[in-house]
Image: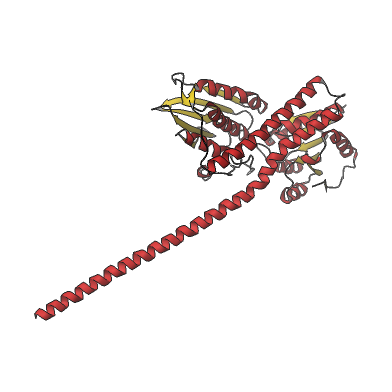
Length: 134
Length: 276
């Protein structure tokens, strides 16, 4: 069974450049383009990892993260924030709400994303929160 | 007796004179206080605008960085993974480079438009055009994007509007900006209606959505430079120039643009252009 990744991203461009290499490596990549339906999609699809943008139509990525952590059925899903907004307020909120990592889109080389995801999925569940290259 | 009367008259005249002088002095002081107040307001407004300029820069950086990151990422994939990519994937990535480059060009164009509007050099190039053709073209351009977001676009045209003189490219820009905002602020399942009708000697165009709507407090600020409406979560998107430029284009045609609440929910952006 291929590992399932849910990409919560409203920007078609970012979805394309990041989903293509993940699909090439055999990941099953699903997409939700607004925040409001993200939590429901996580409940239904039970992804192994969620790539979560912050600026989304409907509900913001930070509120989606908060809700994911509050709900029993989604509280342990691995969530990586993937955004271009790297201000301190967003990072500290994401950490406070329980993000597993915080990546800046412009720092990620798309062809290297699958290795990063593989390392996330192979990590101990109590993976430490860290901030990558801000 | 006569002397007393004269003295009395003089005292009365003196009192009247004093009253008049007091009144003049009082109104002058009031005017000065008013002027001072205006001056303070202007200083406050200037400070506010400068703050907005400051706030605008990180947003502009974000807006420029997003398409650039996409172009860079797509180029990276095409260079490193070209052998593993399917023809469809190559096509998608090339299309992405094209559309992100267009976004960058649009952004640079917006900044230039604003600069022309600021210096009073902005002009429209009017010629006889058909509004039906213009509206249908913009609607079809946005249909695929709306579909991806789970939205529908409906185009309701008043066929009695004859060809008249307007700048078709600029009006496409205004309608496109309004539709793009409607898409941005509407949750999945919404409907966007673009319509035209004759109102007196004006052509009236409206773009209605069933989105989150706009707070009454935000309405007067919407068409100001750098003002960004926030969605229901307070998240702001875009450069805050689209509606400012739209207003500039509509006004350059001699028309007006405003926003109303859509019934039962959402927003209705309306603009008029004189047809004569």
